[in-house]
Image 1 (cartoon, one colour):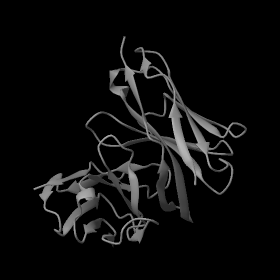
Image 2 (image 1 turned 90 degrees about the vertical axis):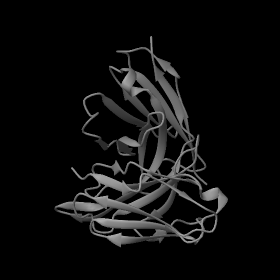
Image 3 (image 1 turned 60 degrees about the horizontal axis):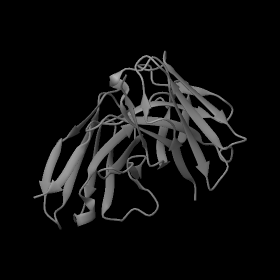
Length: 129
Length: 108
């Protein structure tokens, strides 16, 4: 079964760029019509979707973070990555990667569903000097 | 953008109780609503997708219903391992994902 594992620095300085990688095991990142997402959760708070990527390189981002986010994929390594620039203390959170099942029911206007399964265990990133 | 609310924000219940959690969308999202369970220090786990479809491996005491703007997650007989926080999630356009604020279920 597919498993995901986040990796990257646990401490990032303010104004710098947060970089995380998610390694997919137990299956190819390119198999099936799956997207791959990043989601974060500040301590004691709810979940915030950051964005997703398809193995073709197509991306969708949360509008509130779009100006600072880049998600990329490396199919040869079975990995996808997150870069979040100009971080502040507000970006301190546990960051999760997840397989993103997207079902488009109608194209115009676009509608459908998506759900996340499975998830990585999460990695805490603290933004502090 | 579609906003999600959940009620209650927290509840206390006993083992064996029937528990119902409500999720409401600010506009109709058809049946495109999913539910997750999160235990402390763990990643969320998918319970229900498309409003009422039980994810493989999830106990049958969990069920989901609803369509349009109002949805419910029901636990028919609460078990000790069910004490957790539950989140609903939608992505009606499939281009932008939002989660509800969560409902914490703890022991009475």
